[in-house]
Length: 280
Ligand code: AMP
Image (cartoon, rainbow, N blue to C red):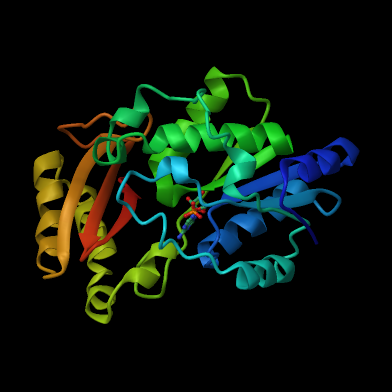
């Protein structure tokens, strides 16, 4: 496994590589969700291809006053997990490698990014699109793998690739969960014991809402009410948003339709967790 910490070194590798390259962009603090993306990357790359993992805590996608400074950066452990998972290349640039102090060009998606997380995290998806574009340019992957946990991010990346003609296949991977239903997230380690015990209500609320839709409730308001009641029963939980949207345009829907999705962000104490569920 090779580790490149500069854009120059990564570019040299790319110039020499004749193989199919599949990229898994991450911010590190790797967990079983990331490992599933790496497994899918291997499948997508084939035995002869290279699996690339980028590890970069992207300042541009953190709002001022958020957890950028305290975001976990367990370098050694991430390396070990990548090695065990059969990763070929880690690209782990320092911040100064990726951003000039007087940077003035950004990539912005202007429709989907206004929904859901975009409302509570202004500038977040601009940061995501900008860094993903840069990673695509530096590493020139044939395919890139993203998790459905960040459903809106995946939709925005697909839109960006379509609208800007990146010749890169985007592959989505279903959410990987703990046994109690909580989606793996690097931020789960911020949770106190009490918050961690309550966090599975996020999934439980979404499942209850889906079940209600499955058994015939068509009114979004009623379906969401079921999720809200379950989530708010947890004393540590504070809902940031809970919406029923169309999975393609991310616009809210009053009536459950074939392509509906419920997406939510909930604070447990200071920690904001996201989750989503497709409706039947
Ligand atoms: P992050 O390091 O949090 O930026 O995540 C990197 C990638 O891993 C993103 O595409 C996420 O959607 C994906 N991911 C994170 N957690 C999970 C999970 N529990 N299941 C599936 N994908 C995940």
